[in-house]
Image 1 (tube, one colour):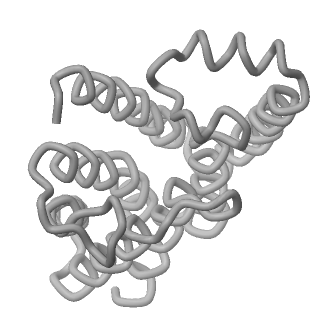
Image 2: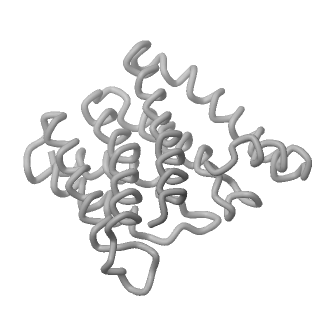
Length: 196
């Protein structure tokens, strides 16, 4: 990987870590209070993203402002922020009374997805099923998610199961309607709930 590509990916994943702000607000105000904040915020994000897609000048301004952070394929479709926000909304709604589960699920998408991208792009040689995804990146995602779940107090079965599910979601191809940023935290939380 070229140093400019690595720098762009580091910027993108640093921005991705801002999803931890949702977790910070959750820890600050708690559940169910978080719902009175995340629902309106999700609507605001949806409205801005939809307006961006409908207004070419706004789209050009926002994608230009975020430079290398926005992927070219996101210029004309919903970006990762809407998917991450909706995924966190669902996790808060369904698992809000379980702080360890919420925290582990959000950390999985923030750090697990970042590990997959950074390790995969830097060291990934073994491509999986002809995709851009690599075995090395997927392994990094799995280990990161498993360690996150262990650190949140979950046993081996729940931690490894959640890591496996989160890694499977991260491996799935991103489409207009499927984005790992939304489904990773939801799937990880469900796996932790089911296997705990």
